[in-house]
Length: 415
Image 1 (spheres, one colour):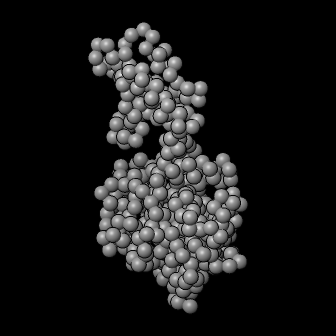
Image 2 (cartoon, one colour):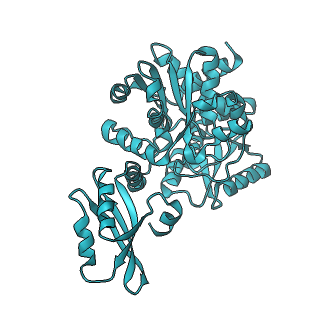
Image 3 (cartoon, helix red, strand yellow):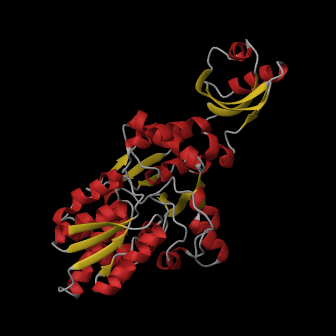
């Protein structure tokens, strides 16, 4: 047994004074779908609905053990890390100053305040996270506070490893495969390091959002690198640069085992889990389950554990999730249509729609010429094959149009 194993076991044991171990549940629906034994490690069911409470608890505990006089902790976060820190500071009776971007949704601010109560102060600083982080670190230097990093910290990694401790204690046998979401790498590196000594036969798949594939980039460069841009939709895992300490543990990972989750496809998984299972997952929390679609030919008959890392989903985002899912499934399109400015032209267009087609949006943009006008049209249907048939009818009737569904630049301007 390694020193890391000892400390991870100790961390898991001490957490029981704060919250019970999260369930490891066999999912009958997914097991039948993939012909495998699919188990979900429900980190969305911690007191703060994410695994981040583990790393925060362990880091604060160890700092306090080494220096009981340290009573001020500082972090920068717009989400789950902030909530975990707030909850743990309330538990330990210490103070925290939590820096959040000015653009943080009010729901996340309110939840963090509820968890921390009088133990925390929230400061809204900066439009972008880099500005928020710089302010938090500067405040630490001025006040002597202890900065709680969300993932690039040995104590945090050790705390996240408690997920692996619980998996091995809860399953009747060692799993064949564990599917892990990756953002900054704290969870993945902790689980991998613990399993390396306690269950070395376990295989892994790592899944990160396609718009924030920092682990894949680091493996390619053989060192952590900063992505030039990040799609923030999967906000719990969309990290521009994987942590240096997590990468030291993950640098030997086979790049073929690192998967990129399409942001729109993740939405289909979120809706399936909600509608079929009644399980609410945030985008990052759905990453591991979504990745099963990419490895379906590799898992038949195997025991697979997917870590559902978080369930902090703001239902005000549900319309966006539904639309992204429709677009991925080919059930929704946005067109720019050149509409003739003559009586009956709109009626002619409407007559081409099939019985399963529906107009979700119709907006005149401008008249591009005296006899024509540009119209933004959002169309929904029930079967993806309905669109080619509709487009064929439109072409035959002489309507000029452009499908802008996957044109991110143009869609951002007009949709």
